[in-house]
Structure formats: structure tokens, C-alpha cells
Length: 79
Image (cartoon, rainbow, N blue to C red; front, side):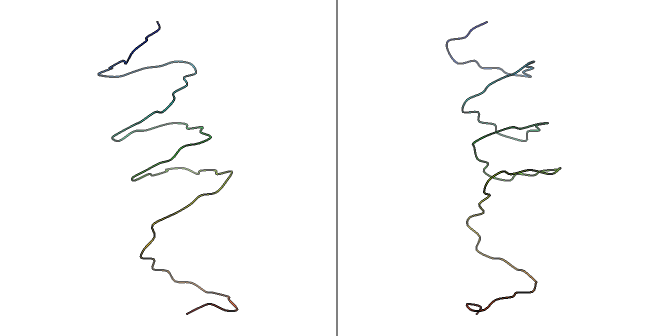
């Protein structure tokens, strides 16, 4: 079937085969068995129960309080 307007699905949605979704917004607790994405972002709490592979850059912003223990080897700039 082809739909030309919004679809409101209350309940389970079972889709077999390849499905392309543009601008997908998921709220609440969700479980995905496989995610293959070329662009996008996560916000809020994100947990990974297995390994992840990133072929680019991961950024971590808004870090205000960091407690760490370790060894530093530096020539200058340590205060």
C-alpha cells in the first residue's frame, strides 16, 4: 500500500525486508539489534551492550568535572 499522508500506528509495527526511514525520531526505551548509519546523532542516555566501531571522530562535549588518576608525560603546560 502507498500512503500520501501521516500514519498513526498504535501498537506493534512489524516490517520485513529493507526499510529506509528518513528523519526517524524514537522516544522512550528502545532496543535495536543492528544499526548501520552514515550520519546522525544521539542525545540523552545511550548505552551499548557490545562493541561499537567508529570510522571517524567521536566528540565528547560539555565536560565540566573530570576526576582522573594516571601518569602524565609532558614537557610544558601542566599546572
